[in-house]
Image (cartoon, rainbow, N blue to C red; front, top):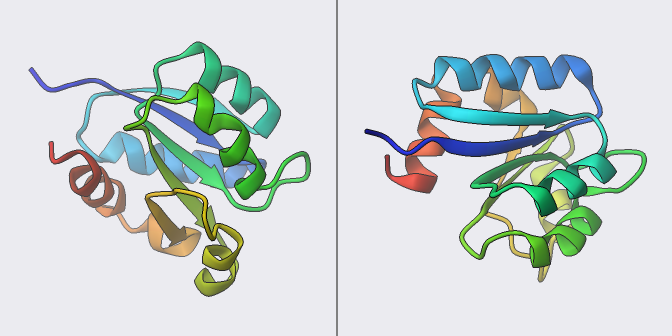
Length: 127
């Protein structure tokens, strides 16, 4: 039996959340999805659930990606993977995360290809 992944999806854009959620369904992996448009609510979920992987929008009004990761890391297991999603240039985003551990930065446009989530989850978890 494969491990059921607990995935937290945080993006203030409902259309982007729907698109990522659709790609997760197509991945073939078993998962439980915790989904929110609020990074503050995402912090609460991270504290209350045993999250394996976070898909995090970089730019949100209440709390940006780097600040979210800094606040959430103490509540997350050491092996929790964090994937940052953005429409901004990757170099800009990586510079903002300097010294903050994340497991990948992806352009949102690259995540819409049908096999994207399967490839990412296989790379992160080897399952």
